Image (cartoon, rainbow, N blue to C red; front, side, top):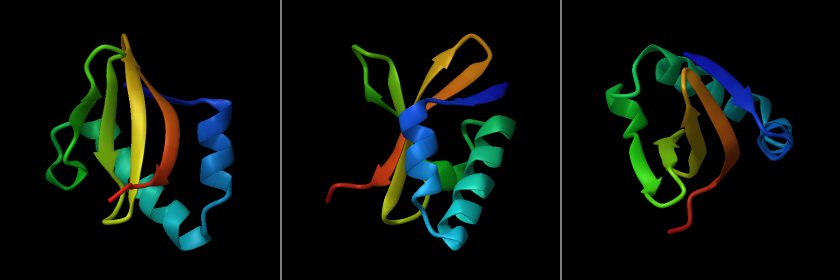
Length: 81
């Protein structure tokens, strides 16, 4: 699998602190290895648009689509509670 960031996701990533960027990197590396990795808690977020969600930490989520062997990261944002 490969990883591709949209312009929005890249902007989101760049706006994060260095520590949070490191956590995002770690979680996305885990996603590339296995979408079922326990700390990701990957799940389908929007069935009709085929958007998935993974947990970055208790406050942040990454949303992505799957296109063949590519994970397309759409956004990285605070999790609405």
